[in-house]
Length: 92
Image 1: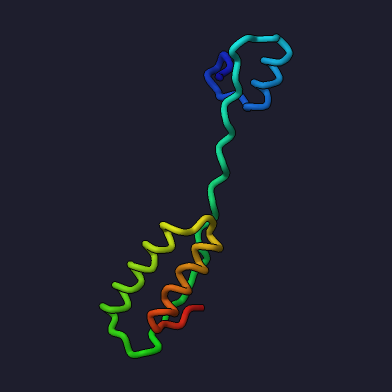
Image 2: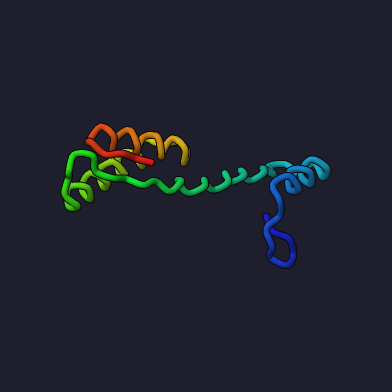
């Protein structure tokens, strides 16, 4: 719902207005979830003399795994670190 100037109205304001006016079929818009903070910066280093090309492949695969499974930036970091550790890398 928008006011006369075209600005969006708060969902709570819309709900209050609908309740006050007794409007039929007036439903509040769902509130959008706040964006997740970006994953914290992690440093990855090879512990088994992996080449840079191998590290790049492993990082890409572990990022894809973390992107598919994570529910928050903290869980993303945990999944990524576990994946890289399992491939012989240290992660800080």
